[in-house]
Amino acid sequence: MKAHSDELKTFATVIDCGSITAAAEQLGLTPSAVSRALSKLEEKLGTTLLNRTTRRMKLTEEGEFFLENARHILEQMDALEERLALRQQSPAGRLRINAASPFMLHAVVPHIGAFRERYPDIELQLNTNDLNIDLLEQSTDIAIRIGHLADSSLHARPLGSSRLNLLAAPDYLERHGAPTNLEELLGHSLLGFTQPEALNVWPIRHAGGDTLTVDPSLSASSGETLRQLAIGGQGIACLASFMTCDDIRAGRLVRVLPEMTSERRQPIHAVYYRNSQLALRIQCFLDFIQERLAQSLHATG
Image (cartoon, rainbow, N blue to C red; front, side, top):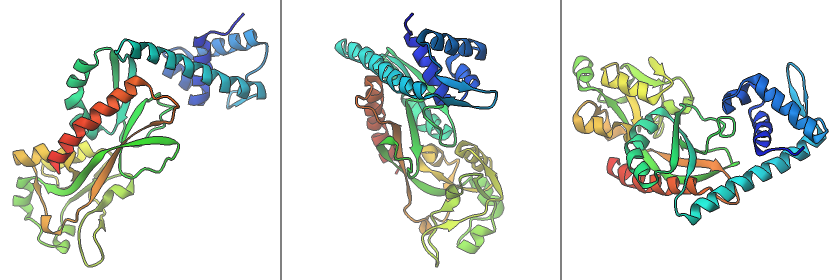
């Protein structure tokens, strides 16, 4: 008997996820179904692909050889489907996009209607994580990342940059007074991130330089949570303009110490794995969102 493409995908997913349980969740199957599929594949091939115990899995030499070729076959199948779609000038298929929740809500979601109207055959999945994810483990096609990149295994496409501002609600400043210098700022309720620490480096000019690492009195893992806390009058936050420009225009938030705020911008990139042929649906989204963000980020400063 010959192996089927579904069996190849199951095998590759188990390796990518690192466990049968995680792969089952990714594939929408039960762990027992995934385990049976692996056993059936090994039976068909007449060899052991994985040495499995209750605690770990390890590819056999035959498994490593088979995995390399299975990936190549799956990539060829994806490329064939994309070429067929290209012939029809109608990019299609599932496109999984991941971004931090503030960026997804304020910079991506407003453009999704126009994207779906332009590409009705692309099935979108929008997922949010406030920390960087493993694209393979989360089965993600495109991740949008804010800040400087470190992972060289990913291909990165610049989408623009967004300025950082110190912001607070008008009623908070009325109750506590607007700071006029660094010493007064440090006496306020400062809102910051639980992690990473680099997000608590604020663009403030002072005698020691152009940035200041703050120790927040109230912290959260999400920029959207900090935005809501700032609007609710809980303190002063340092947030990107892409998520706060409407609040500033509406008067929900005002800039704090603008004359001391240095010009610091967060770079924004779309990242994806390097492939010899970029899937058409990915290319379409990258072109679309880059065009839209170029307009919106320019408008927000």
